[in-house]
Image (cartoon, rainbow, N blue to C red; front, side, top):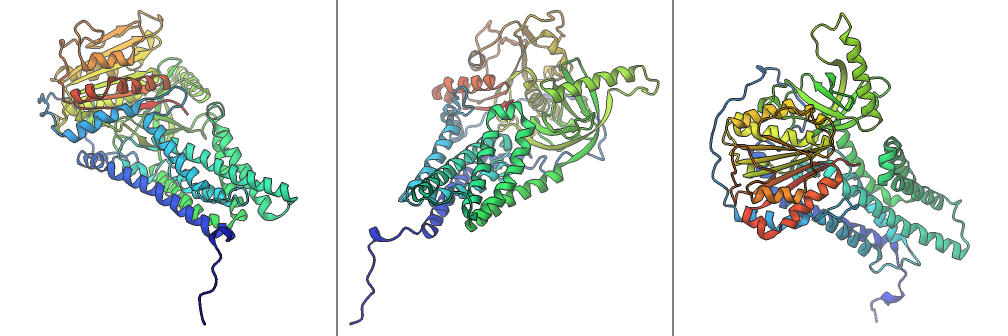
Length: 585
């Protein structure tokens, strides 16, 4: 009698990791791709808004020059009243409830939302690593999961990531990089589980660890991954960034070679990573620009870079990576925020792009020294003529980043900057004032009140950007826009060096971000933020935008201040959104 062959009970079957574990790789990939898809779908309303106001692809192909430009357009007073406030209850409710996600703990550098994302990612990795896997006898599962994380590491590392495009303006590589770092470390964790348990088994059964190709290439790949992770820790990045960068690139190339020798199953996961990297390199080549520029040393701490022939192709608040061809520093690139909006929508009279380099490290110190020496030389040179500044050639790559919130969608805006972080807030201030005054709110900007706060160490630093602040304040003074500037000085240095800026208060104290936010959202007469236009309370229900830029301590304090305000208060204000730019590596 014919019958079915006997079946081996599942408990007695030999675990075939080369059949089962690739399935867990696919499950893991489906999970994280689905999560990315959900976030992308949730970002569609914001993406649609950026399409309507022309912010979506601004700067996608790099900085540009208007060859038919007719010169600077002066600010004209088209004093239009702000349009009525939005009644979108869903947006206001979500913005209010989501404000608690900004809670940030010291030394971690991640807010509550980012921490939850990392914990969820850790949970998924551990689940896929250990679920029904006999790791002690066959730790291949962890190795398969380590390889499956390679595409994530590259997707969140590239400067021109498809994710940045899908999530809309303000979600550049610097905002996604925390996932890259954590994914790399969890990839190393999976590799540690895989490698350490295999070494244990080899020692237990007396098998050679080095010698055979598979074992030797595995040890080499694991060692390279360890070097990448250790050299990417924050202390190493801060103190030896050049060594970190080159080690990162060279070690990953070597890792790909050794992991391919170690296992044939690595190829399908390396190809997507190479595709992400190739697309990034291609787009960066499209964005590279070599331009003439002028260097101006304002003092021994600040150098201004005026780029000639760049007047469009960026959003206020974005940054470029700058390479200046001088001395022996021509091979270094550094990120700098663009100081203003494009000339066509700016309150300033600059004919191009302006960058500012605060002395903070070897490169910026060398740039300042070079500029001051050349300025002294040209000052006594008969060939100087009327040219202003030191002429140099530069290379720029970008723009990148920018603000994730459009100030024009909120009736009240609070801009807080610390030190050279003012380059970010000054740019978006210039943009929103020009859109409301110079362009006559043609995109429906609803902004009524702006509080601009700058915290610095010395009174003398105010002169760095006093002319720009004066031009913006004069433009706002001609309109219904209520702009007030507060400058807080934390050190009694050069008290006589205080330039006159309209509607500006200068105080010798260090403000609290929470106090500033409370005073802006619930104005009290006699507060430190009293406006020269009168004690006009912000219109409740129109929404509040908060932008902060500067040291990590300032941005963390600002995020915690927004979270501390509470959901009920945020609902009363019509929603509150925050964007921070932290100057850390």
